[in-house]
Image (cartoon, rainbow, N blue to C red; front, top):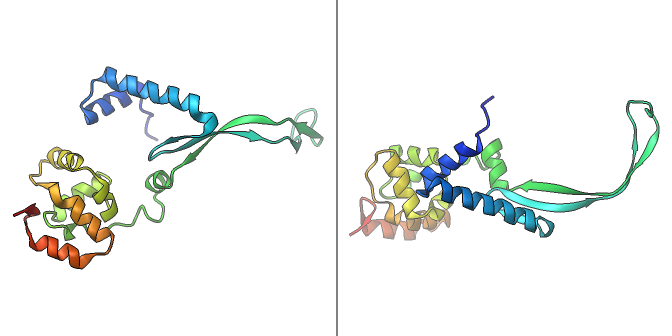
Length: 183
């Protein structure tokens, strides 16, 4: 089993990915934690990860399974508990659910070939919908980290049309493009 990342490793990774200093990233992470603690009673959503909520567990009866009271029924009082529900996308990505295996052929997008599609897949961009929602700056970062030249400026627009099944409109747009770029 892989070892857990330390807080320092998490901060270093986020610092590298965002271009912020480690100190700035630490401030953001600490403030996110403080906000989550404060808002948990109202439910608190961490986008892309899940929802934290405070819940009341009702009183219940329980049969003791071992110890001096084994076999006896006892009353367990009500209590507050903290619950966390993972977002559907988090579950599917981590556990490999039904849509996690689903991939679109990103090479349909003008300017994306099989190699770039593979790089995008490794970066977690597997469907037209995910590509459509990815900022161009993030796409440029993914390409530069993989040492691929390219201009992803129109990729989200093309992917949105493909995700919506508007293939005729996509074809018309692609006719106006050269290598994925506006002519």
